[in-house]
Image 1 (tube, rainbow, N blue to C red):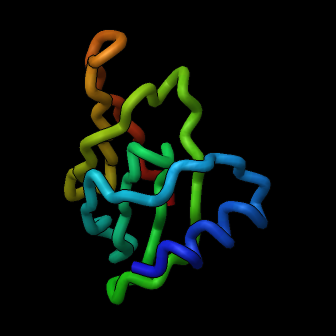
Image 2: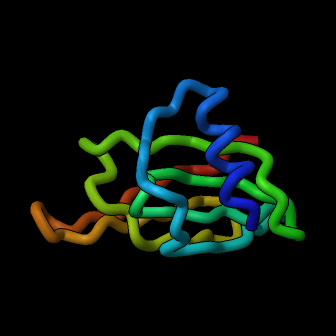
Length: 99
């Protein structure tokens, strides 16, 4: 995974997180066949091809994602992201896949 490219993509999109990209969870989307990677340190979601080449970078909002650490998918593409509860309650957020 090219961390420099991820930083460059995030900067171009106006993201301002300074922590470096350190993956904490990864999973392959069952429909899109893309690799989704969470970095809690930089509070980002990176979507990459199956060779690990980053294609999209999203910055998490701290209110909804205080410490994103886990990621998984159901077969229908529904995504679950878990947050650890160090400073607040632990949560699991559900995001339905919409083609």
